[in-house]
Figure (cartoon, rainbow, N blue to C red):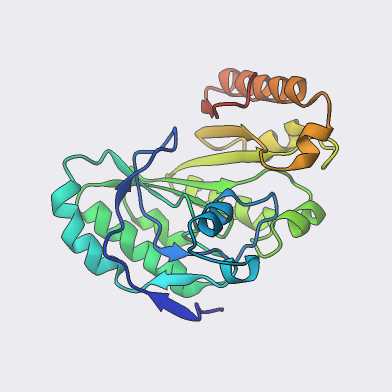
Amino acid sequence: MKTTEKHIQRKTLLYKTGVEYGDYTINHVLGCAHGCNYPCYAMMMAKRFGKIKTYDEWCQPKLVENALEILDAEIPKLKDKIKYVHLCFTTDPFMYGYEEVSNTSIEIIKKLNENNIKCTVLTKGILPDILANLSKDNEYGITLVSLDEHFRAEMEPNAAPLAERIAALKALHDSGCKTWVSIEPYPTPNIIDQDLMPILNSISFVDKIIFGRMHYNKKITEFKEHKQFFNSVANQVIDYCQKNNKDYHIKSGTIS
């Protein structure tokens, strides 16, 4: 197991997010060891606002060591305003190989649940079995944009293998947990030529699917039919979810 080389302190953690399917969120790590090359929007924003300088620095996560103490102060003030808390939008709560990050995430979820606050989780890591023992109101998700391990190794070099992600999510589903998948950022055929249906079939057990197009990659606009392509695959997701009685959300800007 890897450990974060540096810890940081913060004064606040819980905040209302502007993300379209979010409510409150918590990002208790600065950086992410997964090193995604889509490129990563969170990394670009961290560089823009001076929190990091380089990709290598981003890939050396820094855990907020006083996260639980901050929650003890913030939860009483905010709990009546919170519908749910999402872990996480600018880092990964179950960063692959980082037990220290995962353990802190579990303690955060426990503390929020103890205060009757539901949590939603999204990871490119491995969701631990212990989550099945926490509140059944929680929702656990993975990111999955391909079933191709070569593509995963190129675009998500230090994230968990795809089959292991799916297996961990399926285990939580089989334990009675609510599960979901984020198929975002979905690439165009000039980046990887693949069929969406096997991806959908591989996560047929989940309760909800969120789908969104890839942004910030110049190869997208090089694919002249990218608007028609994203319209087509988004409608494929909608059709699949409607036929299989699943909740879904198509990210803004995916369908033109």
